[in-house]
Length: 125
Length: 93
Image 1 (cartoon, rainbow over the protein chains, first blue to last red):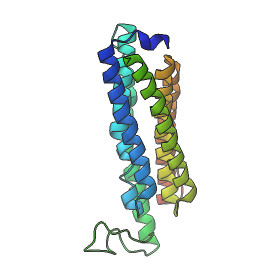
Image 2 (image 1 turned 180 degrees about the vertical axis):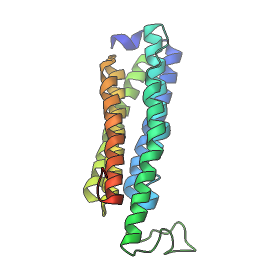
Image 3 (image 1 turned 135 degrees about the horizontal axis):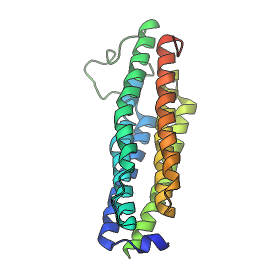
Image 4 (image 1 turned 90 degrees about the vertical axis):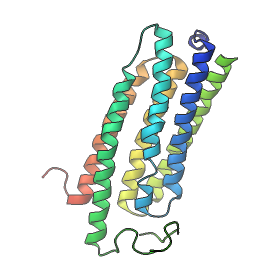
């Protein structure tokens, strides 16, 4: 690993911390995507990976290439800004599509089946 | 010492992102309705993009970054088009 040897140890620790935070948050988001009960709960889970998962890994990448290239490398910020702008748009389109499909099929609206138990695992809607 | 730590963290990160990609693909396969599959596909796009960025960091090249950019753009367009299709029944009206 030639290029990793040229990084200052403190910067390397910082890069490792940011990459670890981003990775673990992305993994937690997909675990939530797999385990949560209804679609409207599942819609929230991948936003972990989109927001701080992407941000942590891209901050680590910016730090690493800026250290290696001895000048600030910020073209990763473009990817981060693009993810932050596009993720709410896609998830809102998807949520509205799911709501429209539920209404068109005459299913009960979201959250109306268990009024006193917000954490109860409902059946598939 | 810190170089070994950083290398180990990058390998661990690649393994974790591959597991996350697998979980998203499982949601695509088992999603009870169509919107669950679209959501799983969007999440799989994000995981693949991050996996490419971390692989580029591990190998010290910047060429994976453009591939990650293309994957991010395609993920946005694909999810928006599929959400529009689910809502209206057609993509371009």
